[in-house]
Structures are given as C-alpha cells and as structure tokens.
Length: 473
Ligand SMILES: Nc1nc2c(ncn2[C@@H]2O[C@H](COP(=O)(O)OP(=O)(O)OP(=O)(O)O)[C@@H](O)[C@H]2O)c(=O)[nH]1
Ligand SMILES: [Mg+2]
Image (cartoon, rainbow, N blue to C red; front, side, top):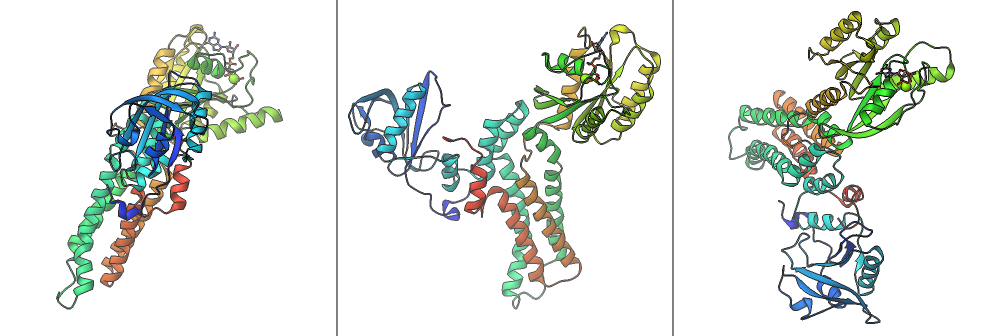
C-alpha cells in the first residue's frame, strides 16, 4: 500500500449513489462518502439520535424525511463509518432502505438537495485508490470481479484484489532498487567510492527482474481468456452437422439446420461458460470451393472466424470416408496456431474406418491428446464427453490456478516498457557505459513497473480506468 501523500489529497466533496442494482429488490443501499457525508444524511435522518453522534459501525434505525417538505420517505437502517476507517478513507454513510426503483430515486434526489453530488462511475473506488486504501491493480480487480464471466475470472480477480499481483510487482521493484542503490551512491558520491559497483551483482538483478517480467508476460493469453472469454469456432465442409452441433452444445435451437449443403452463410454466435471460462461458440459456413458469390463470402467469414479462434472444433461426418473438402479444411485448422478438437458427427449412421483414422491422425498431430470424438448431434450421443473435452482444453489454455494473471492491455504495455528499459540497461552495462546512463534506464524500468500499480497515474489514466466502472462502485 502506498502512502496517500504519493497520490495527492483525496477530493472531499460529498458524493452519493445507489450501491445496489437499480430496480425492485428486497433492499436498496444508498451510500454517501465525503467530508459532509454525515451532515448531509442527518438532514434527512430522524432516529433516536442524530447520526453525527452515532457510534461508528453500529446500525441505527430511523426514518428518512424530505429535507424541504419534511415528508417521510422511507424507513432505514443507517451505518456510519468515520474517516479514515472506511472504504474511501472518508466519512461514509450507508442507508439501507426498502428496495423500490422509484423510492431509491426519491431518496437519492433528496440527498442531492441536502448537499451531496451524484457520484460518477467508479468514483467510490477511485477515492479508495486516492486515499491509498488500494493500488490501481486492486481497483481494477474490483471492476473485474463485477464483470467476471466465469469462475476462473472471478477467482483471478479476487486474488488480484487481495494484492497477490501487487506484491509480485513490488518484489520486482525491490530487486531492481537493490541493484540501483549502489549505482546511485556511486553517481552521487563517486569521489569517495574508488570504483563503480560490481557489474556482476547488477547484472544478476537485471536478469532476475527480466525473468520475472517474462513470467508475467507469458500469462497474456491466459489473461485475455479470463477477461474477454474464449472463442471456439466450429468448422468443416458443408452439411457435416456444424449447426446441429452448435444447437446441441448450446441446448437451444439457435442456428438453422437443413439437409442442403451450404445452409449456413453468416457466422452464428452463442455465449456459454465452459471450464469456468466465458466462451463464444461460433458456427461457420461450410468451407468448400464454390462459385456462388454469397456462399463464397460466407466461406471467407469462416476462415476469418477460424483465424481469430482460441480453439477450433473440426467437424467430420462419421459414416462417410474423408472427402477432398475435409482434407482441405483439415489443412487449414491443423496449423498448430490453436488447440484442435476433432469431432466425427452423425455417428448414429455409422463410423467409417478411414474417417476414424483420419480424425485420430489429426488429433495426434495436435500434441497427441487424441481428442477425436464420435458424436451424434441429432441424438445427443457423446455431447457430454465433448463438453467435458472442451472444458478441459479451455481450462488448460487458461493455465494453472495461480490466480495471478494480468488481465489488461495496460499491464502488458507497462511490463514491456519495463523490460525494454532493462534490456537497454544490460546493453549499456555490457558496453561499459557511464553509470548514470545505466541508472537512467533502471529508473525508467522502475517507473514503468510503478505504472502498473498506479504510483504515478495522472487524472487522464484514472479517468480512463474508472470510466468502465458502474455508478455506485
Ligand atoms: N443422422 C444424423 N443427421 C444429422 C446429425 N447432425 C446433423 N444431421 C443432419 O445433417 C444435415 C446438415 O446439418 P447442418 O447442421 O445444417 O450441417 P452444417 O454443417 O451446419 O451445414 P452447412 O451450414 O451447410 O455447412 C441436416 O439434415 C441435419 O439434420 C446427426 O448427428 N445424425
Ligand atoms: Mg450450418
């Protein structure tokens, strides 16, 4: 955690927002934070005592009245948190009332008339950050937690909120500072120090930190899978049953199925969760050489969908021997660019030996996992096993459960800057450059690492990050 002084004083004006989802519910919580939070709430609150004299963190029962007309608004339980022992580091009041959309709006509006300002998206979390209650990685984890699209993303965000990732960045910075300190001493007091500090120790520190950065950079795919979800493309020649399979996997009649080859033209998406990861399953047009310009456009879309997929599901037709078109599609998917699962559909009509061998060979060239499954989209045979296999492969692609994966492009960009500066520092060291040149690169790298936790984040960066939050967070 970084001292508040490093980030400037928190703005003290009092803001208010609904902390629970808008709409009708059992309860609605309205939250105020700021210097006047208690005074503003007291303009509406009538209970045994005023909130100004209420002990912190103890529920107080009372009623809210309109500050102008005195008309009763709602029955509430009020909680007061006093600075600095609150989530924002300021005085905070939480008013829990009955959950009605209109009611909550009336209370909010009355609190604004009593002197509060409606909060901007993410403004509560931003104040927590400015007060040094959390660093930027943790603030982002709050947003990630709310928007988590699967169990793994949720776990990762929670670990990030706990500061797991922050302490990793801090450890890298400490190691770098240890290397930099003797160098700075030499630059400042060179006259009293006969020789530049040993390049060996510094080199060791640079190598260690670069290795640590490399490990974090290696989690990029994993991070993207967690935050954006995975794209799984169903590909194959026309009429093998891709659309039928999409419907079977999604458990709904989503894509048009027909016995005429070339039925699907546009890609069709279904969102689902597999292996704890949000998945967009994409059905594509059957791939074959065609003279029909519309079908041809569909085939191009299929190829594009395949290129951007994280996993390909190649569909073959079990009862028939492999066709020329099957081999052509197989050549497209088996390029090692992404994991591949081969499915032999229509197994209810038979399982051709040639196609079985062909599918197994393809699956083996994908790393020998042998994920070549016989299924029947029509009867539902083998669909459970296919879901299991998909979940396993996606969960492998999302990596182990360290819960310490960076999920944002911002993080990776900063890591890359830190690494490039270290590379330059190592080069300068090697070339016997002046100590202050090496030190400048090390400081640059330290700064870039600090950007990840938000040590020198300006308003523009904070605006961009907190804009994606909901109001009330
Ligand atoms: N017997 C049997 N027929 C199936 C099965 N799956 C699909 N079919 C039939 O195969 C035909 C083609 O199915 P689609 O799902 O439209 O095939 P597609 O691969 O999406 O075809 P295109 O969109 O033209 O590329 C339809 O008549 C389906 O009813 C299956 O498991 N068993
Ligand atoms: Mg189709």
